[in-house]
Length: 204
Image (tube, rainbow, N blue to C red; front, side):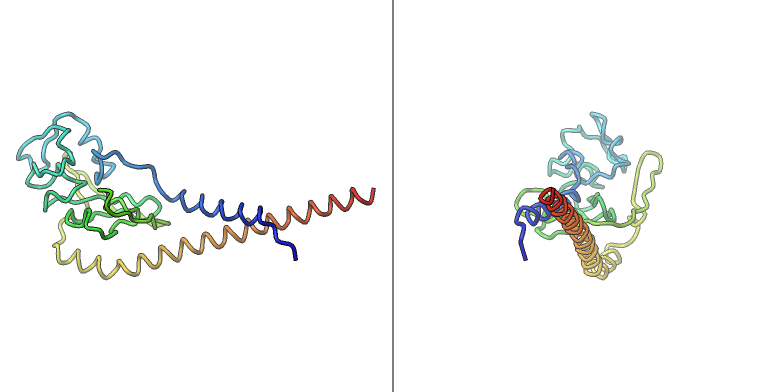
């Protein structure tokens, strides 16, 4: 039985491209950890803390120094204990995590965006999923799970995290296996049709 290294290499390259396709375009450093509905809120040069306590310049957004008590100015760092980081998780379920989990060398977001200081790299394991409900009230947005207690959220997250990661990995593996079989099938059909064409030419 003949082997065709070019075809095998082609299948491998396509598989790698499909894996890379799950990675979403990077968010600017200033808007890291910000929900898309909040991007307009952070667009002006002077931004108000969501609790109305004070204002800060846009240059101080995600500068790793806590200016707002509620953590409005540090959505993408662990500087403010009350802030929350938004994982976009393109292709899977978006979620909020506590800022204490940002750059702690543990991958909490399936897109790896919570580990963004360059010291630790997380693979993008986002495959498919739903969406988190998000509300906006008088220009101040919040997630629907924001009013839950820290202990409740931690318990729920720890319980579901292992299962969700396993399900996401299995879904990704299933999709890749199916696509590889489809690609191999096309290559086999192409190879057979080429052989038939060559045999017809030889007969002539």
